[in-house]
Image 1 (tube, helix red, strand yellow):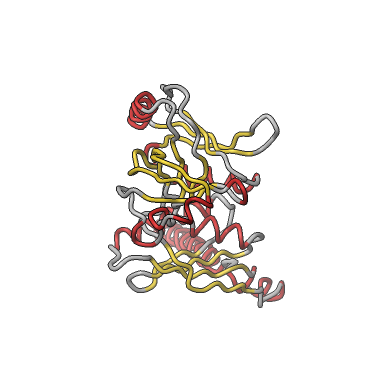
Image 2 (cartoon, rainbow, N blue to C red):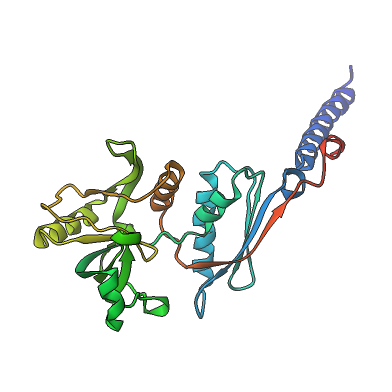
Length: 278
C-alpha cells in the first residue's frame, strides 16, 4: 500500500470520528426537555417587595429559590427574572403545588427577641398601644407587638429589638418531642453561639421569642444559660412543615420579600407520541 493511500485512509478515519462526535452532540441537544408542556406543573410569578430592588439581590434570590426547589426533587425547574423586580418560577411535574408555593415564597427571616411585656387578648384590645404591629413598622431594630397562640390562650407580646437572626445558624434539622410532635432543632455557628450564651446568661428568667417572618412561633422561658448554641423551634407543625422549615433555615432567608402575583396550574398538552417523535 502506497504512502498516499495510507494518508487518505487516516484522514478518512479522522473524518468519520468527527462526524460521529457531531452526530452524538446533535442528538443530545435534541433530547426533549420535559417542561411544563410535557409534564404539566405549576407556574408562579413573584414580585420583589420594596421601592428599589438591586439586580444582585434579585440574582441571589434566584439562587436561593433554586436551592429550595432542588430539595423537592423537581426535574428541570426554570427560574428566571423578568424586568427589574419579577421572578418566574416554573416547576414541571410537581406533585404538591401548595407545598412548593410555600417553600419557594417564604422569606424565612428568623429573629430572636426578648419579651419585654405581655398581655392577654382582652386587656391588649383595650389599649391602642398594644395594637399588633404591621406593615412598614415591622423592622428588625424596632420594638413591636405580635400575637402568640390562639383562642383563649392568645396573648400579645411586646418584643424588643432583634438580638440574633437566622444568619447565626449553622444547621437545622427535624426532631420530635416525646409525644411524637415534630419540631426543628438548630445549632448555631461559633459567633452565634457566643452571642446566644451572652443573651441567655444576662436574661435569666425572661422569655426569648423565636419569630419567623414576624410570626411568633414560641417564647420559651430562659431557665439557664445556653452555652452550646443549640435550641429548638416548636409550634403546631406537621411533619412536612417541620421538614420544609429546616430546609429554608439551612439554605438561608431570601434577601428580599416576595409577593405572589399569579399562579397557574399547567396540564400536560403533549403526550407520548410527541416524545417518541422527538
